[in-house]
Image (cartoon, rainbow, N blue to C red; front, side, top):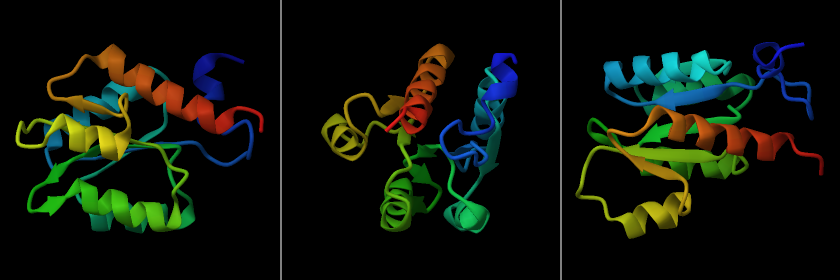
Length: 139
């Protein structure tokens, strides 16, 4: 079985393993979806928090790539809401705004859990891989 065929289902739980991308910029959503799909991930994209939360009723993603600024909403608010019911979902924060301090991003996502736009495609693929491998590693 090749790498592309293995990725969409979690080895540990047998549940569908998918990556969520939440960003209000359609070009970023599209680019990230193409990039992650090219590495074999099953990806769904969302432009807002309500869209994302409606989609996770059947189960959360294996990893969330989340823009800090969602138009008038905050990605931090989405992250806080997700933590209440699905604290196990790793979140990679992305931002194109310099107003957010590195300290706040590090506090929210850990030292390797955020990227400033524009970012290297290989770097985000590596980050997603590491976070989904953590979920699938034997307990």
